[in-house]
Length: 483
Image (cartoon, rainbow, N blue to C red; front, side, top):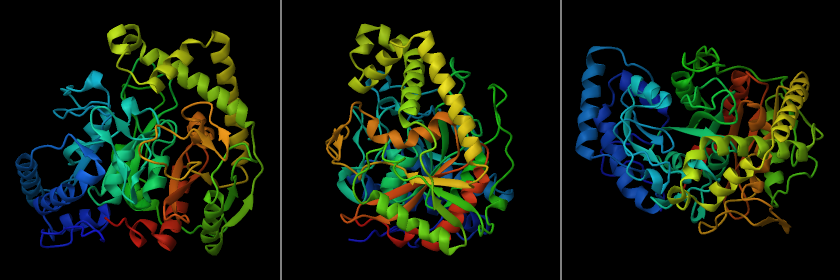
C-alpha cells in the first residue's frame, strides 16, 4: 500500500519539506505539538518494519517539549529552521540524556551528560530530539546492523540493506519519519545510504562542520558530519545551522549562510563524468547506465557534460586510504583493543581496521600522506576546468539484509569488507564537498544515486547544481517508498 504520511492526525503535515514545515510554523499554520503527534504516529506505524529510529523517547515527554516550543514561538522569533522540528540524531553522536550506543555492546547503557558540538548546535537551534538513528557498530561498514538494535531495512525493499553508516537516517527520511537528519561520512556513510533510499546526502568540505574534538583531531581528516534530506534546500538549511568553526578545534572553516544563495543559473557550467574510473572500480550492471541518463538533466539545463579519463591511480588512492584510515582507527580505539574483555566484543571488521593500522610503519604513513597531497594537487588542477565531477555513490545495488557485505562484484572477489565502496575514496581522502543525487530506479526497482563533487571549499557550487537537478527531477517525492 502507499504511504499514508499522517494517518489519524487530522492533517497531512509530514509529506512536505522541512523548509515548508518551518514556514508553516512561522506563520502559526501548524503547531510543534501537531507536528510531533504526526511524527509519533508515523514512527509507530512504520518503524517496527524498518528499524530506523532507535532509543525513542517517551511520547508524553516529547509532546510536552513540543508544547514548550509552541510557547516560545508564540512570543519570540523562531531560533532557526529547526525550532519545533522533531530530530533523531545519528547514534554515533553523543546526545545529552539519550542512550548513545554507537551500535556497540561496549556502550549499550551509555547515556551522555553533555551534547557533542553537532547535537549542541541543533539543540540551540530549537530541534526537539526524539531519539537516535541506527548505525553499524562504531559506524564501520556501509551496512546498518549491530547487536544492540539489529538491522535497518531498506524502505523500497525490506529484504535489502539501506546502506550505512547513516542508514537509519536515510530510511527515516525516505519514510517521512523525519524531515531532516544528520549523518557522517568517512567512506561514503552519507552518500551510500542516501543513494539506496532515494534521498540526498551531503558531505561538506572537511572543516566546514566541526567534529567533536578528539586526541587525533590534527591527524584524522577523513571523516565529517553533514546533513541529509529529501531536497538540497532542506540540506542547506540544516548545514547553515551546524556549520562554522569551533574554537576548540584547528582548521575550522568560516561559513556564510548558503541558503539565500542556493537558487542560481547553471547554464554553462562544466561537468565531468568519471564513471568507473576507467574500469578501476567494479560496478554492477545498470548503475553506470542510470548515471549517464541522469547527465541529460544537466545537459537540458545548459551544462556542458563530457567524459573525463581517470585523473589519478586508483590503486595508489586505495593504498593511501587504507593506511591512513587504519592508522586513525588503531590510535582512537587502542584502549578498547588492549583490553581483552572489550576486544572480544568488537566485530571482525573493526578488529581488521585496528590491526591493519597497527601494522603500518612510519614510512607507510608518510608515503600515504604524500599520495594524498599529490592527489589534492591533481584534483585542484582538474577543477580549473570542471565545476563538478560525477560518478556512482556506490558500486552495487542494495544487497540482501542478511549479508555482512558483498563478497564479489562481476565475479571479482572483494579483498576487504569495504572494497565495494572504493568509489568514494577519491572524495573522502582529500575532504571534497560531495552531494548524493538520486538518479532513479533500476530494472529491479531498487534506487540508486550518483555523487557529484566539487573543488575544496566549493560547497555552494555543488549544492546549486544539486538544486537545479532537483527542480527538474524531485525523485524523493516523485517515487516515495510503498509500504
